[in-house]
Length: 153
Ligand code: MN
Image 1: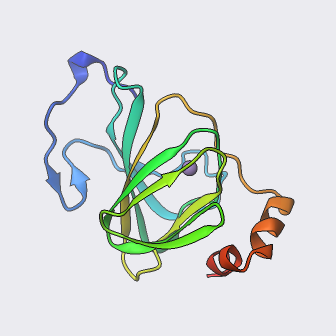
Image 2: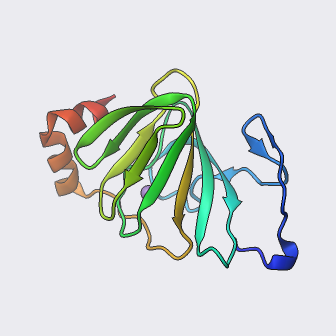
């Protein structure tokens, strides 16, 4: 979803966690990966930048796909609070916290705070497809009490 310079809109007003003329899309088009109640808005996707800034919003009790990939994510929580798993760490997150997801690191965000969890996510424009955990990967995550407790919620 790359815009040419001619199509570029220079100003977009914010209101109620929507940005003017930005479509709110389903989180993943193919529906193959497990996730729950997430919407996605692509805020910046200019060919000159070679990256994209997206806003994801997970409804209360929802969660993102547990996945890993070569590309990394730079995340800023904008709205609400919840929990995230990054590798073997589970952390509480709230508005304006920053989360770095390195290459090939399992990650998942959960809106466990009884309200929506919204975050900005910066990512490479060209990126590899996410990998889902196989049985062995899940067994390893479940063998660690910290990640097991997070995934059991
Ligand atoms: Mn990811």
